[in-house]
Image (cartoon, rainbow, N blue to C red; front, side):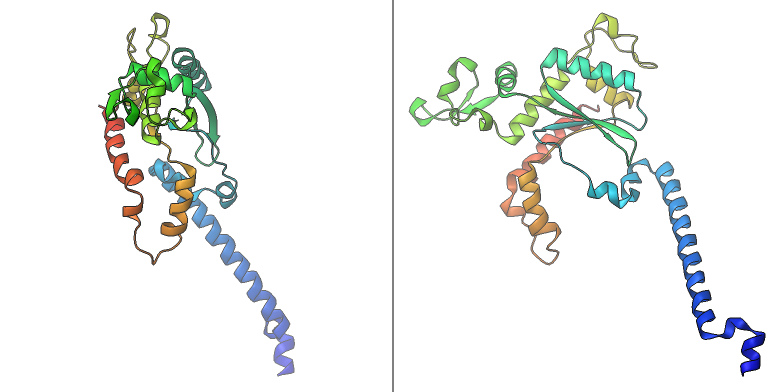
Length: 260
């Protein structure tokens, strides 16, 4: 037996373990390369699936953007010149507060949009939003007017005067209201932009903007993650969050009209 081991060193226990370890490492390396190649192929064939194959470290380091109502997303590798131009137009015409984020995992950029209370108050009057009156003022719903601000329910807290849905609706109206000037008609390649035409809806239909969607309140999402996503055996808490789940459907219909 000793002679056989000397003739075949691979049969020695320590050598056999070393060879097995090397084979395992090669197998793992090969599998990793195959997976990476497959993920790259899928991301090219199905762009929306790219974030599923993002490195784990990118998911762990994601930081939420506070004070955001609406997100404007752009396709991968959108030119910086267009982003800067649109950013300037949105801030110039509507007074919106915008934070720009670049997502390394998908090579896409996004605008995180909100508005200050003063801007929302003016927008609510401009777009004829109805708000509830205080009982001392007769109660019921009435079209909002800035001069009658103190007559409405919740006017004591300006930061929470509007509901999440109202804020999102008003911010979307402000975004839609940004229109092109005479100098903007030939700025976007391969897109015919008429003077006075709403910019964002046109860019959506042309594919220059990939999507526009609302952002839910982070506190509500964290609560849902605990009682719904992480607790897989619990009942779906639809009844506890009717405003979040059902009223969003109406808002989604509004957003979809921008694509038509």
